[in-house]
Image (cartoon, rainbow, N blue to C red; front, side, top):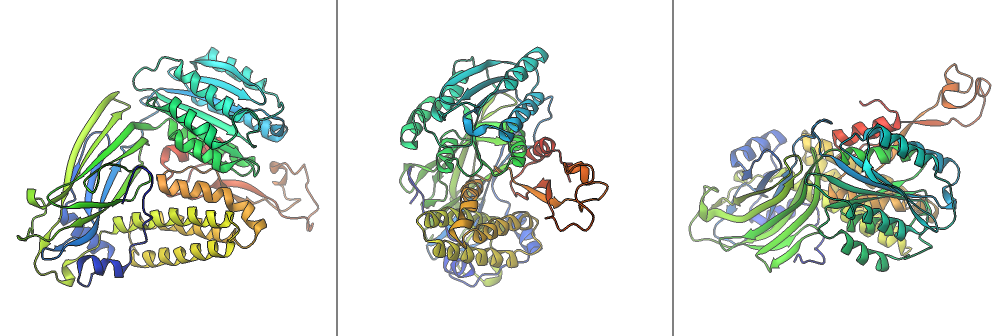
Length: 547
């Protein structure tokens, strides 16, 4: 049962479960057949110029003589991202760690990336700068990024110098307060970017101390807080909790080459926000009951009947999916038409702020279940989109639980859990061959599970993958790209004419040298949730050309 504290993990949708749900053998249609039959079902939808709300049942037909347990899917789809000219104005405060550990290449790259960020803002945007080491300093109060303002802000960035300790909480609170102290006109996107490479060792230091204050500061503020952890020494769990409380993303920046792509990915989202303060209210109707809401943010309003699921914002092209476990009671009268009033089982109401129109939006729809007396094998078609979403949640649950086991020292159980889920993903892939949606999502699931499994062979290997498991799990839960990892291509052989382009000096090593072959970042790692806006900015910041 979903509550305002936790939800029950969902397992992958497998054939045995489907058979139990409808009490007859199930036909797993080919992708083309499934698409045709599901189009005939015409899932309930409420379309608007902004976010669309669509609902669909797990199966095409159910028995009317039996009570059945099933799932209903709720899908929110954002419209395309606006153009740069039409996008919402942004208020952004960059909070930078300038403690002693940021000395050297990290500080140089932080400065250059901050300047790139400032170059992306225009006069309608406002930016502010805060730094922290032992002390917290408001270097540049939030103001318009016109030509003069940009030059002044860049000059401030040039003055960043590494200092001493790490007062992370003080820097975080100061960045938020700078936004809270500034007039918030309608339709502005308000964001704090918090960057650190170490552990909090000044001010408040633990999540139990920081999160309650942070939550109170951010309540009803409309502010998103994104965190960036550089290297292996930062507290990934604290940064994840901060970003979750701040309705933002946690980025693990493994190497200096990834700092630019992390900034770019985050900026691409920030500049493409189309909706904020979203909330879906769900109500079971006509005797149906809700048995579970497979979402971490689900809040119970009335047990088994009414729930709400909040979302902070949506970027252009993003989608959000909620799976609702339901019990449908037997019914005396068959209902072949699932659009009948009596056939409806779940009502959904979506409320949000349309950022571009700067006004609140409200829309509702419901979904019905087709109920017949005799259910034949050929009548039952599984909703493949819901099966894929169930697999997504399964992958996220696995990564989160496996990391907890690994942290407790049980690498073997963690690896076994991941390998088991890899097999389930392979089974779903085999059943979904030819599905465009599956081809987009499943390779990312497999890549993430494989990389994490490879990092569980030893304690040494795990230290290199533990933080990755944190942000990958959160990305799957949120259906949002929040990674900065780049992929590399081998450098040309030492001595070749192009060797000097990669910083190897004019001639590099001698031809035929046995020196190790280096590599250079050449693109962004595949991510099923990366939108065009995120891809464009991350590629631009990293110096890559888009595919």
